[in-house]
Length: 119
Image (cartoon, rainbow, N blue to C red; front, side, top):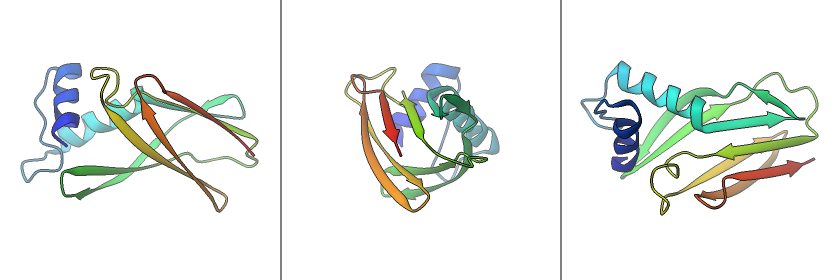
């Protein structure tokens, strides 16, 4: 969580308290904005809006839940994830992708920002 709060402060110039008792609605809105800018999902070649659903805290890890809606038939999904890695090349994050009962997991790093799934 510390790294995410630091990333938001560096990007937007505002100190945030995500995952802490002092967390504000404005902090959560900045997190949503950050996700919209750094997690891009294309379904069948078309960029789809990623809707931030909720978050949980487990120890010092912030788990975020997002969804892409209005997908009738899934042939390909391209995920571009620069969360945290755009400012710290040693950062990593895991993304679990669930679609139509199938789950895939990916590790994103500064050198591995994009994954393509074919169904």
